[in-house]
Image (cartoon, rainbow, N blue to C red; front, side):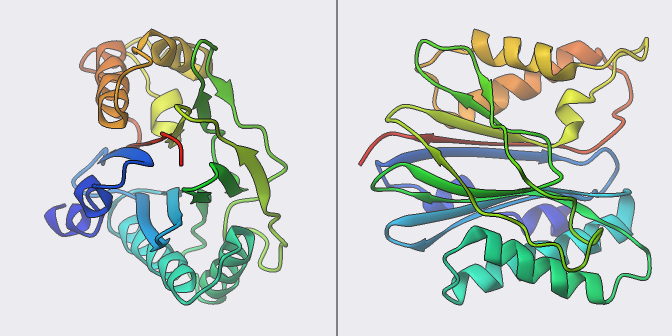
Length: 239
């Protein structure tokens, strides 16, 4: 677990840029898990990020997670600036050797830190939420595609979302919406949106992550975790 969490970046690695604020958390259901997140600056103007969820749990899922994370980062840092192309290349590579028939849902994006333009690709992942000042959280609707390793030659599209100064993007894995209490009831998207609505619009990204995680904990009320849980929040402050 220590090795796995050590592979995930800390918010401090991208701190000091007044154009955005970021917070992230990954909590495995067991000792280790198949959730992932990543973020890094491609250059001084663009931030890459991704959140993913590997089918299954334990060591096989953790190893597959590490492979998917590494491939996406490698393609982005080699100069690929189209997020759909990054996901397409990662899908082709991972699909080549997958004897356990695992798959990865993933939401990946590249945020232009000067303009707030977000290009993103959704590979079978839960829709993220956008929190805008004075408005209820919105789900990011997308064309998207299947999880990675389901259709080897699928052409994942690159889609666009314009953020405005102060907008916050919150990406989760299904460990949030599918968190289950002792009676078997799920938290669901509706409750998740209500939790996000109740968080102060002045809260920084880390506070949003912490408060959402705490609310999930109150909902499950000690019930055993049924899935890994990951939250990544990015607030774009403006150019």
